[in-house]
Structures are given as structure tokens and as C-alpha cells.
Amino acid sequence: MVAISSWLADYAGIKDAAVTAVGKIEEVKGDEYDYLRNQYYKRNIKRTAESVGSDLWVGGKTLVNSNTVLGDNVHFLGLQVRGGGRVTIGDNFHSGSGCDLLTENHNYEGEALPYDESFVRDPVSIGDNVWIGIDVTVVPGVSIGEGVIIQSGSVVTHDISSGAIAGGHPAEAFDRRDMDHYERLKSEGKFN
Image (cartoon, rainbow, N blue to C red; front, top):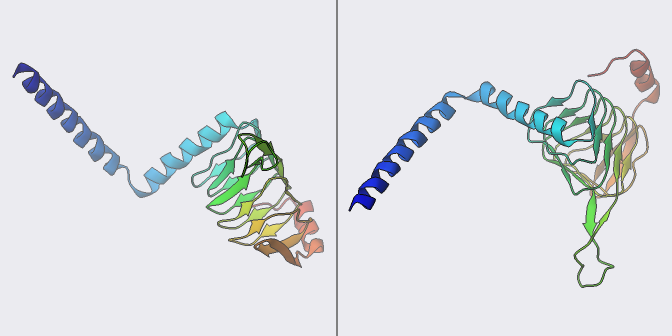
């Protein structure tokens, strides 16, 4: 009987602590919560990445690996690096939410079917001044050139050349930036 009374007292104490904690969490709402969450992801990126340039901005769930190199003025609204391969992202990069950069595949040419226990890693490289929209997936081994825009919902399965505007599944270039305009803004240092 003493054990049950002790357990009930412990339970009541835990319950009271939980109710208090939930109340405090509920006090942090809206912008405050978003700010704290984004600071958590920003700190996590700085601790995890190989290197991080100046002016990192994080506005959503973003996870990188220890082989990630970030340039200056990188903006994430929500991106995950999946796998242990190398990722290089240039200056003035912007991502929409829900983006995935894949850096490794199962080894389907290994010693078992449909694949063995090993992985094949391929780097992902993204140039300066690139904007990728919401829910974009980039597969291992892809290079995205300078100034590229990737349309929302795209799956990038091969290299995209500098200045291209690409989209689809698989992503294909369907237009190009006005490179004279692009170079003028770049030379004037007009970066968002």
C-alpha cells in the first residue's frame, strides 16, 4: 500500500510539472515560437556544418550534415541534406520550404538484391545566387550553376547550367535569366 501511495504522489507531482510546462510552452506563441525554433535550427547548422559563411538566415526546419559548406548570405526556409555526402552552397542562396538535397544512394550494384548494406555518395554543388522553390529535390551528383532558379516541386536529376530557369520532373531548363541584367545587379552588389 505504501508503494502505491508513493507512486500516486510521484504521478501527481509529474502531472503538475507537465501541466506547468505545457502552460509555459503555450505562453510562447506565434512570432516568439517561430523565432526560438529558427534560432535552434540556425545554431544546429553552425554546430554541424563544416563551414558557414556570414549572415546565415533560417526560417524553417533545416538540417545539414558535417560535409556541408555554406557561403555568405544563405537563406533557408526549410531544407534537409540527406546522407553523408558533400554539399557546397554558394553565396546568396535562397531555398523554399520542404527542399531535400540527397547525397547518397543505396548500392544496387553491390552483393545483395535489390541493394546491399553499403551506400554510394555523390556530392551536390550549388553556385552563387541560386533560388530553389518550395518542395524541390536534388539527387546525388548534381551541380546547379550560378544564378539558377529552380521551380517549385521540381526534381533535379542532372546538372543545370548557369543562368537557367528550370522546372519539372525531371527538371529541364525552360528559360534563361537576362544575363546582362543579372551581371549588372551582381556588379552593383544588389543581393537579397
